Image 1 (tube, one colour):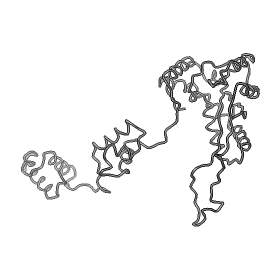
Image 2: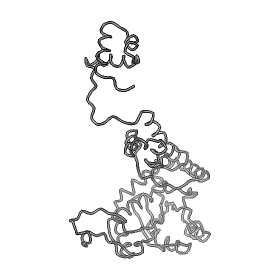
Image 3: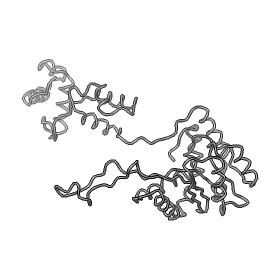
Image 4: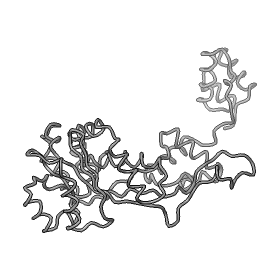
Length: 331
């Protein structure tokens, strides 16, 4: 039914005031009883039959269409707003902005998806078992662990960047973004941290084998190891090779055993890499050697409290992994 005219509403009120019931009034005027009831309730509550002022044009989507849009988006959260609207059929009468507005009003916002390793059933089981084994460790226990990892520090030119410039100054050196041939520079580094905030960073070859990895450990572990230290590294081939195992046994280095695969979220040094890369990204090195110099400087400028807080998060990481049955956690 279309919009009820002002004259019809006045007639409804007059009949109700004369003592007629809602059903009788509706039958006499040819409108449904619910419409009569709505008009009468508005009149008794406000003393007026007029609609309240509403800004903008009326919404073209019904509540059913809104629920359908949200249901499609929740079923497949990686669909674009255009794909959701096409599947729903709303784009036949509305725009893509309407679809976006419905999704946002329902709390479904477009965001960049977080990247997490793909876990199979065996890896999830191993993560769960490992977390159960170390669930009783306190922060003071974790501070004896030396967490280590390799990472590639890259400085690629940005593909797009906005600039404010005067007209006809597009190619002025001040307003152009400088690029580097062949995709920029990168350095491979090995790092290790300890619970008191001490750390070590070593530049290493782009591809580590057992021999080069053991050379890195010769330099990197000096000054970090003591009688209570426990060394952690993941299951990379050069870490688990027979010669590396023999090397570690020869140096009588205690290992944090059975580190679960695909578990960067349990290793606090991964968060430190993110801090380091963010700091390095503020610089524009012109060579790989300069990139290494900047990386080393920024590594040692990181406050010790950052590392201490990462160690303090270990019990929470274990708890979260147990709560989600071994799946990826927020760290």
